[in-house]
Amino acid sequence: MSDFLDISASLTGRRWVGPSAAEDRAAEAMAQGTGLPLPLCLTLAKRGVAQEEATGFLDPKLKELLPDPRSLRDMEIAATRFLKAVKHRERIAIFADYDVDGATSAALLIVWLRDMGLSATLYIPDRIDEGYGPNDAAMSALAREHDLIVCVDCGTLSHAPIAAAQGADVVVLDHHLGGETLPDCVAVVNPNRQDETGDLAHLCAAGVVFLMLVEANRQMRLEGAQGPNLMRYLDLVALGTVADVAPLVGVNRALVRQGLKVMANRERIGLTALADVSRMDTAPNAYHLGFLLGPRINAGGRVGRADLGAKLLTCTDEHEAAALAAQLDELNTERREIENRVREAAIEQATARGLDGPLVWAAGEGWHPGVVGIVASRLKESTNRPAVVIGLEDGMGKGSGRSISGVDLGASIQRLAAEGLLVKGGGHKMAAGLSVEESRLEAAMERLGELLAKQGAGLAGPADLKLDGLLMPAAATLDLVNRIEAAGPFGASAPAPRFAFANAKILHTRRVGESHLKVTFGDGFGAKIDAISFGAYDGPLGPRLEGHRGAPFHLAGRLEINQWGGRQSVQLRLEDAAEPVHR
Image (spheres, rainbow, N blue to C red):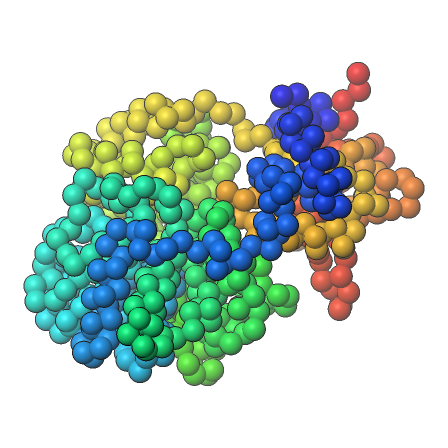
């Protein structure tokens, strides 16, 4: 495949890759056959959407895409046991993970039970004192006071803690990679069990919980009873799906798309308060969920009280919701400050160790366990390699890892635990957690690098910039951007389309804050577009474009709609630029 616009090394060092010849042909045929704009057809063609599927893809129906919940093992058993607890008004406890997926999963169950006139005990472990997942002491204590414990977004590998829940039944609703054996409990519903087909492996825990509630409602209908309206719950499913970086394909795409519509109604008091404190002034989209709401929900579990996020999501009092949202916003600011300190130290250490191997890793004394996962994400993004960041304390390390497409980090971490190099570890393909003795840290990371190298990690240079096509400034209209949005929502495994503008004339530049750049560019014939490049001065992009001296540039990024003063305009989220190659 030739370099798009002949760009083999852009200002950020990336090769530009455009649509293949086959994708170009498919897009042209789709545009002719459907009357849809060619840039939209290029986006659909790159996602493998056939011409006859285009209309349905742009208007996905959840009813058609929702899988039969009973296609997952143990689902019918789990829903039956859950409904038995409801019918007999048993004491129910929900043990949830401390991240957004755990909080939304717990909220789904709590809200459903509340709509049925019941309450449940919420238990979310402290990240620092208890760590991830069920522990013996907590499960034993919950079992003494409850008849049923439902573990959400955790529990698949918790054999001993579940065994400690003497006297209570346990149901697990999870999506993390399963081991060769399952804990001894009533049901383990998990699309990533070893004995599952993998067809629903892209579901997050909130998606699994939602399917369990679908099955519960179905069983109630068979008995002549009516369950709560689950469509009203989809805002929670959407938030969990996007924040957990689950692939936005198949049913996930439909769940998020419908969930965003539900969220726009502003009926959930907690989410409304959080949107307001996050200064969201437009209809919610996947970006808002992943970068505004999600981090604030997460902040409680990272640097504050672990249950704050779930409490906000289930809140019914506007004053309490406003107070919780404000508290989470403050904690998120604190989290960012801690993250910045750890990130700088981790980058320095990882750079000294070398960034060209199959694994990038760093470990430091006192690094807050609540931010190591975020820092690992930053390292992964900047190096295009799997990354692990570990906080050390009293001879023990607790860390998180993030992976790149095509490299299964969770399986490698699990193997390391089985080999005895880790105290424990698990996760899924793109993210994992681990605990390791400091004395075995170097050996564990060396072995992890070997396992990841066998999967191809370390072979790639800087990530290619994948482009959907070429646009002229005059063609980038509000109508086009709105029509492209119909191919969304965009996120993990479904990136927003990027377009290039060739030989753009830079009309105006302005530095914004410490590191951002605003640009106005045009085609020389009157059409012009505003662009914003975040972090442009952290690399060569800002200085080079600011000092353009009238030279033309190829510009690349994602189109979006900017709202300001009640007016809408097209804006380019500028990601890269390159000087034209003259042959």
